[in-house]
Image (spheres, rainbow, N blue to C red):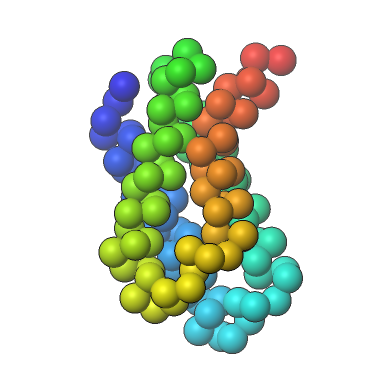
Length: 114
């Protein structure tokens, strides 16, 4: 496993999501369906793109990338984002986003094999 990619992409995915959510929240458009859908879609798309850059080809290794990326994001959210919105862990879009982060590397690999 390439640990540099694990941490670099995990932190990168979280940073893009944090900046996007902060901008949407700052302009008071975070509660609209479009912004929630956009954040969920963006987390999956970012993870899908990053999943193309990992060298491991086994499904187990790809799932481990997804697990680590999701754990890195959740830890950073707990340490940083929860200070701004303590209720974020109680929303379905939050967990849907991290489910996509978790599954994206394996889905990317499956789509490349066809």
